[in-house]
Amino acid sequence: MARVDDELRLFLEGTIQVESVPELRAKLERGKPLRIKLGCDPSAPDLHVGHGTVLRRLRRMQDAGHTIVFIVGDFTGMIGDPSGKSKTRPMLSEEQVKRNAQTYVDQVGLILDVSRCELRYNSEWFRELGAAGMLELASHYTLARMLEREDFASRVATNSPLSIRELLYPLVQGYDSVAIEADIEVGGTDQTFNLLVGRDIQRAYGLEPQVIMTYPLLVGLDGKEKMSKSLGNAVGITDEPNDMFGKLMSIPDGVPDGDGNLAHPFGVICHYYQALLEWPLARCEELERDLEAGRAHPRDAKASMARAIVAQYHSEAAAEEAAAEFDRVFAERQLPSDMPDVTIPADLVTDGRIDPVRLVRHCGFAATNGEARRLIDQGGVRVNDAVVGDLAAPVAVADGDILRVGKRRFARLRIGA
RNA sequence: GGAGGGAUGCCGGAGCGGUUAAUCGGGACGGACUGUAAAUCCGUUGGCCAGCGCCUACGGUGGUUCGAAUCCACCUCCCUCCA
Image (cartoon, rainbow, N blue to C red):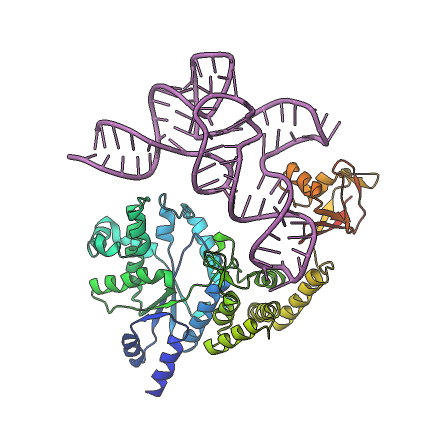
């Protein structure tokens, strides 16, 4: 049984909760490949590094011979959700769902071997199910049990809108587990309730309940909210090396509590080491002590973390280059080695000069003339390091000049024909 | 079905006939400081304009008024209580 023990250890690694370990062991002991379900919301196809960590763990399970089953929730995605606080759940057209699913699969493919995955769309079985089947599904759960989910309960308590459709959502997700006969379903801790519903629904349909495994949510770059693309605090797994590095450098050292005090002075850094680099807890704690004692500098700790993560998603070389670039641009305040070329149409230039407002707008650094004016007024616009002081006076530009807006936006100007 | 409350700029939330492009907070952006951290400080934050100024905005449509985000009518959506 040593092999089973090893496998069990592999499965349990990094989980927050497993329901239940004995069931998991029993499944593994049968020696058959397990079907591991991974749901995907087709309205938000972009994966961030927090998902990446879970995917990496799944990859190991896949390499151990198990099957990852992706479920694209196209059925639910096409219905949309007009109510609730999650307004970011628009109705999606069929092509949109397809395209998003493809994006998702492409991104997942960076880590998992997609050719060994099973990809399923849940419309496949929900179209069959029909209204009668839907009602039957609904009959397997009660409102009281549904309200065990905290966000549902709190919305009821605060008189926030809560559509019936939302209540049905966990059931739909649970039915997916029935349809694909999932052995295991994984998700973030925020999914715990939904995953548990899947167990109950499977039981109701006479199947062996799936084991659920939840993983910690990654804190976003702001150090407060969970990482999420829609909150704008995420590092995407497809982000370019420089971007990825820079974003990771911008995390706060610690998370302020309600009073603005730092409960865990270097909590976010350590959290990233643990979650993203899979450092063991003891090593993270040691790092935290070093940081607190001043033996380690938070900037350096972040830099090596950022490097390691860029290396994960790109390469050692890319990570090294990104780190060097970062120092060049932000520590030494030099120009980035690489910046977009922007071609200025010749008719915007008169006698080698151009209206600064137009220049800024043409380069895409301001959405309106007013915004461009403001940037100039505030001294945020430079051409070749010289501040553009007067928004009314045309500035001299030549081919190859560097336009800089704010601290981090650059463009190399090309004077077009 | 009945009664009442609400809808304001990216978000939250003031204003309740003129001096309101609309207090304030958050966010965002620019500047100082710096480790592209936090904290802090200064500034900006509807559009067009070099500027004078003009235009569009407070759920929608009409109306009252010299003048409306503010009053009236109808409509849409949301919430509460009753059935």
